[in-house]
Every structure is written in structure tokens, then in C-alpha cells.
Image 1: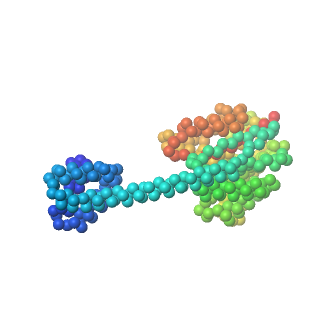
Image 2: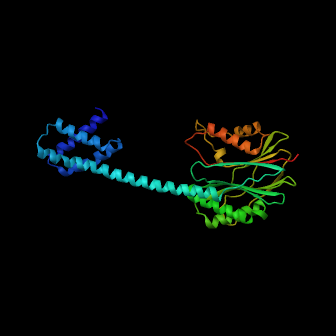
Image 3: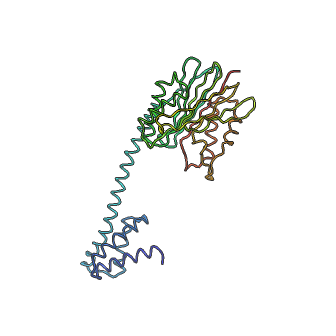
Length: 338
């Protein structure tokens, strides 16, 4: 017996029980479970009506009173479809409202968090940040101190959607307010207070904060639980992993952040990214290897950083599992002094 035959027989038994079995209440109860079963099969109300008519013919029911009485069963089954359809319409209306809200949030985020990439004779900068959905949990910011100093930050909110966008907006305003005169460790300490006091307790932020003095080629950096960055040495064609101790923003009120420094030689590059790069899932559902990213950087190391980040992004998209996307941000600073 096929599954369809089983459904037909169940409906036949319900009609027989209601018309001839003398237990109308039980028949009505069976209508409920029958409705749930056929709805799960994606059966349409029209198909149930056709089934009802065919069964009346097959059972030889021609008496007008019995036919009219059997319609009670049909009505009970169709009522469940009505509830389901109304629930579906309600859900669709809510989704439309949600989509509109997300569109507004995405537009506000794009406007409020937009960062201009400055140009210099002494260095080159490239950055790309692509959300997995409408609203991103990644963020990068660049501050030109106009005195030979440049600050930048790359952040990743542990949390998504509109709350993440709001958190990023607060961080940007905090960074813009006092980032012009702060070393990375001090900036992270103050930003930590902003997140700890104003952002949901279940939402944390990782951040890599750098300060580059392009008059001396000195690079100062701190990290709040962020992915380690890379320092590419052009003269040796090798990478160094750079990281500093520090908890994610928003966890500990009086957190302190370690600060380190490095000197950039000619054509050396600082590469910072979010976990959308390091935890990217390939088509076979395995994680990408960081050496794969390093090899790509080496292939285009002599290009402008903006061309490098674009090349890496497009290469990653070709190998990424499209069903397991995450926000992705990549930032490169290259020392352009000889």
C-alpha cells in the first residue's frame, strides 16, 4: 500500500465513522490529525475536495441528506487549511516588515559607518568589507591624524543584525571622538568602556587597533581578542604573525591591553582580517588554510593594496561554500617608502 493509498483509506474511514459509526466526536478528532498529515504533504484544499467527491462516488453515497452530512467532515478538514493559510499570511507580512527594517538598518549602517580611504605618498591602503547578509557585523575605520600618523581599527561583533549595527555605530563615534590622540592600548581601553556600558551583555566585540607613524615607519598595535594580523616582509618574502594580549571588548570593565610595535621596511605590508577569512568554509565544508591566503598575497604582492584585497576576495568567493557565508573584512597597509 502506498502512502497516498493510506491517506485515502484514512479519509474513507473518517467518513464511514461519521456517517455510519455513531461516533461523530471521534470522527471530528480524527479530522484534526488527518489535516495535519495532508498539510505536511503540501496537499492543496482543492485536492481534498476532489478526494471527498471521489470517495462519495466510490462508496455509493447518493442520498442527499448523507452527502450534506458528509460535508461536515470536509468543512472540518478545510478549516485547518484556513488557519494554516492565515498563519502563513501573517508570517509573510511580518517578514516583509522585517525586511523593510533591515533595509533601513543596512542603509543607515552604510551611511554612518562609511570610511574614506586616504591617499599618501608614503604608504598605500586597501580595504574591503562585505556583509554575509544585509547588515554586517564587521567594521573598519581609518583616522588620518594629519601629522604623519594614521590610526585604523578592524572589528567583528559577536552578534548579528540591527543590534550589531548599533554597536558598530557607537564604536565608530567613540573612535572618532578620541582616536586622534590615543595610542592603540589606550584607545581599546576606552572603547571597552563604551561597549561594556552601552551594549547588550550578550554582545562582544573583537578589535585589532593599529597606529602607523609613516615618518618613522613605526607601527604600534593592540588587540582585543581579534584574529592575529600578518606582517609581510618584502625583502625576505616571509610572513610574521603579530598579536597582542587583550580580552574582547565589553567583557571586563577595567581591562588593560598590551601594546607592541614593529618597524616596517620598504614594501612591507600589514594585513588584518576578520574570521570571515580565516574560518571560511570551502565547497567540501573544510576550513580554508591561512597558507592559501598567504600564497595569494605573494602572487600579487607588488600590486596596490586595493587590488590585492579585491583579488583575494574574488578568489575566496570562488572556493567558498555559498550556504555558509560570514561577514568578511580585509585590510592592507603597505609602506611605500624606499
